[in-house]
Length: 341
Image (spheres, rainbow, N blue to C red):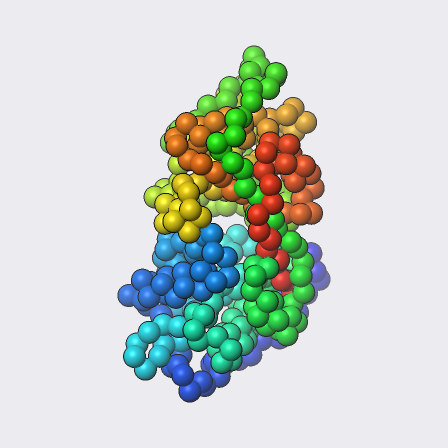
């Protein structure tokens, strides 16, 4: 918490216009561009992180989030009408703990090394400054962040040139679901029910997630609107997700999505574990490995061959060690560049 409001701590440009480039025309996109934007991002993903791609639904969210406007989005279009560069500065919805703006986007591989990424990066960063400076009542910290895969050194250079530094590393870990998930003594315990997530418990899990993640880096509480969009997406799987119930309350959870669009890239059918957590009142009871094991068995029974999750290498929960004990192994790494105000 700072004494001054963010608008007094952040110097932002009054006007915002990307630098001219001979190969593209810059403009704000519309919902009619969603398919073309997604195609550009997928093209970049094939080089930067070949096993997964930016979901189309996440592009749709850019146009639907209540805190986002067309001024937060940018595309570079060739004379032939092809979108080859994409930039977005997305402010998180909840600003009670901090005001965080995420920089997202990419340049298609065949148009790289022409300065487009530098232009997009500068525009994103300046737009993020404007969003932070608009917070005239906020005395919390302001943060600009950008996730950069370890296979994308160009993006890392651009982020560094903008004054951001590496604040965190995240590791993608994978578990082979063709390997058995052994029963462990204590998984079945009187008073602890491990069950699939049901629709009537979705908001209970939101509240549990907000409690469990209060001490996690960069985490903010999720609103009902955001949570309903997440759990209502075509990729979210109630049947594969697990909750632990104690005295009628959600004590722990393991939430799963399945995006079949990524299966061909990975070469097999797999799932992604979005969130694992234990509410603070029930920590120390061994609930996390129990909900994970139940989820692993459910995914294997559904015919999935692998599952992945991301873990903060500086997690206060010691999650890396837990996941390794459950058969997960490191597959990829991603760094988070940040600047704080």
